[in-house]
Amino acid sequence: MQLPAPEENVSEKVLWGKDEAVERLGGDEELFWELCEIFLQEYPKLLQKLGQAIAESDAVAVMRAAHSLKGELGYLGAVEASKASRALEHMGHEKNLSEAAEMFASLERHLAALHRAMKVSAGATR
Image (tube, rainbow, N blue to C red):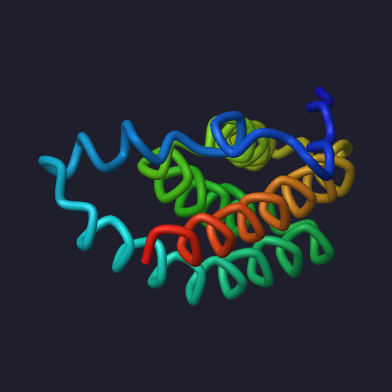
């Protein structure tokens, strides 16, 4: 399974559903930005755990780390990154990590693009 790589100038709307996420929080944009700050601090740790689990062929750890990322990304409306996390979670569940390194690279690209978009959007609105 291969996801398209995010383009450098891809629209923010494609990377994440900020408006929908704020709506899920009852319109509380301040809370949304607090959650984004927490995500930006925490996702590198989860990504590291996921990468290590893939390197060690630890399917259970892949499934757990990918599940955690999937949840956070889904809440932010980061559809493509969430799809990559879901695919990795499924690979871990099925104990078939043959395509995990490729999917992990795709996830890293999507997360880097999301990180940039969040920083730009936060700078423009805060």
